Amino acid sequence: MGDPLTAARVLVVEDDDVIGAALESTLRQNGYQALWVRTGRSAVRAATAEEFDLVLLDLGLPDLDGVEVIRGIRGWSQAPIIVLSARERELDKVAALDAGADDYVTKPFGMDELLARLRAATRRATSTARDEPVVSTAHFTVDLGAKQVTDHAGGEVRLTPTEWEIVELLVRNDGRLVASRQILTQVWGEGYQAETHYLRVYLAQIRRKLEPDSSRPRYFHTEPGMGYRFVSSQAADQLQ
Image (tube, one colour):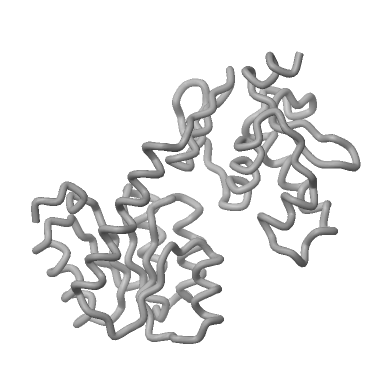
């Protein structure tokens, strides 16, 4: 009860009234703030309207498949997502994790175990946000811990999950060439190493959102036939 991590705001997405009520009650008794919704569309709306520190998500919802809900939430929030599901197939677990979930708990589960997983997920997120660097340019800032990009005025720049993965990979290699094959493998998987048109499309979108002049890139450079390079102001000084 005295753990400061339990001040977290939790979005509970569960269509079963008995389980949903039990989760909401248990969370509040343990010091969490909880919002309970029963449908996937309600969950995505809530994630776009409010900030949550963690999401508990049932995959078997009446209106949307849980994997779709994960992708919808990931478009707006980087809060840890813990899946609660009766589906035990490895394929279902992999699909949920690939879509952006952070943990997978199979029903039935014990409340003590679930609370422990909540604490672990919150600590990981807090530790990551505290330890990861922030990379600033004259036109935008990339906070790798918060998984957020802001413009020069401090307003948030909305990136899709795929756009963020590309930006994150390039920014972490500030000043260094990243091969197209490496980006495709890391973002889309082993079977996409030849799909270089994916990168052209997504880099064009990223430049429109972040470059002062997308037709003359200042930060996200193409190395023809090789790959892409992000160059911040600091890296540019080092390369000269």
